[in-house]
Image 1 (cartoon, rainbow, N blue to C red):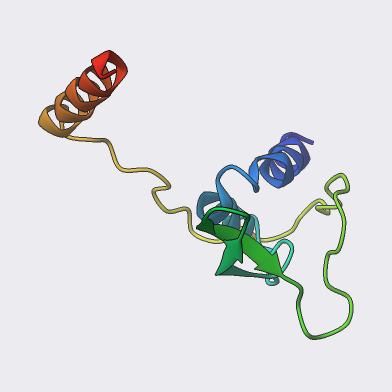
Image 2: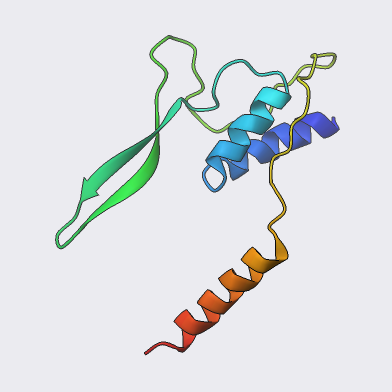
Length: 107
């Protein structure tokens, strides 16, 4: 039950943490990507262009194509867990804080 909750939350977090969500998905024993392959595409708007991370649907049939609750079955073998996030060195974290403070003070 707890793994199903993690799997369902993983689906909800995929748009915000796409790469980490795919790693969690593999750790839970899923073989296929959540929504398809990740790709970076360029979009043109009126005055500018920008890059966006998008999902490309899987070519083969039976891929996930919508948000739905986990169907993780009991007894599924799990992959060996790996570290999802590395702790930032205190110096790097402080540099980022300073950069944000300076940016907030700029006119």
